[in-house]
Image (cartoon, rainbow, N blue to C red; front, side, top):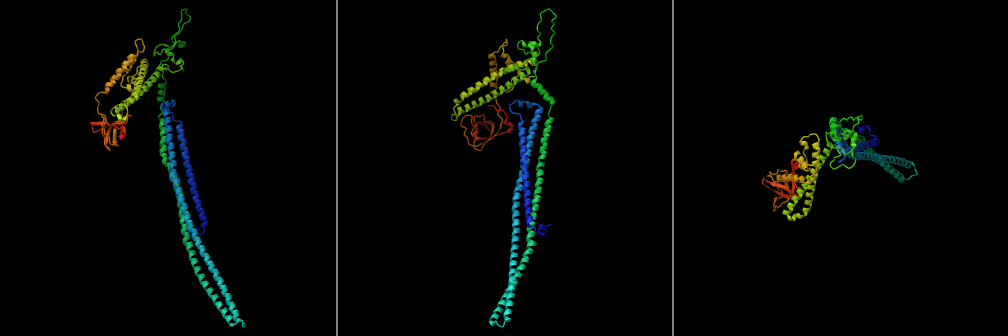
Length: 554
């Protein structure tokens, strides 16, 4: 089956059909393009949905995500975000593998179609020109034959007329011969052009047109195959992300299975447990006796007489805590309006926050001190006196924070003394006081109260100086060589002429034993016994990931 033989006379219809094929291909491209836009829009909506329900940072809502059900919901939101990413992948792959590819192919197809039909029109024009030449030769032959017949008849008429002179007869005879020769020439020319036209016509219908139509047929079949391949790609792009989408859904199922109702119930207990025992039985008051009656300590009405005393386990008004209205005013500094267990948690959190602030200020003080030492050794780098004010300010802040921490530690020790016995490990403090045992904290709290229960500042300060003195002595113990936390490459040559510095040569590789603390200097080591500081800008540092988070001491 060939268009060249079967459709040799359907040039115009083939031209329309191939244009329709290109229109179909462009319609499919438009369909895929709209599908990619839908995928992108869907992915964007999923991401916005996931973002909308994400917990806000530093908010009460974020605290709720300690429950396993909330954690599972958060995992679901994250999985939906990844799920949206797969729809973006579908859009990207369809755009690159189908839309862009077919758009280039359509341009090539249009160019090829234009070239083929141009060749077809050119062949048509050639055969039409040959036909016109044949018609012209035929008409000329016909005309010359008629002229030759008329000339012959005129000659015969003149020859039969006795009144015509011999010269006129001869002239007519010569004219007839000329016309006859012209007819013979026209006949020969017509015969030659006819043969040539028949040859051209045969080649046109049996060679040129079949070849051109065959190319058009192959072009059209390639278009059909290409659109079929694109449809397969359309399905494969979706199929490729199915495993990943399945993993996202598996992640949601796994998160749902991780929900632990018992754990959530325990978290509720930890969050709201007051630490009080339930109220005891109310004593019977016999009004039939004429004796003077007193109001029972366990009476609900007694809660109105003065402030309840928070004595855990006693038969005081503290037992009625669940029935006492909560004070909606300003929260006291010592959180005394909270139940014992909740108060302990608040105080512990406050102590931890203060210790973090102390550590931060201490690091800043150490950095300023180090920078001042550098300025003393290298006056050209800066004025040491310019750092005195900042150093004094930071030192004062550290002192204030430590006093504040001691105050909250005393309250914490008081609350822990009233709660049921806790393990020694649970009573240890965080931050700078990680090394102090619960006994130190208890002693601190005891030192801050005189025998009559009043607060004694001098004793607490004396205890603080003892702790600081112990820490100070520990800093001057024999230190082992600091371990290398990475390597560095010297970008420039540095002449270490001052004490504490080390000379390096451009391109040299050395070990890093201490990071830049903000003063512009990095501590490095060459071999095992030669170490010192170099400007951080003179080296390119490559920290070991395992040692990067290690704490370094100056």
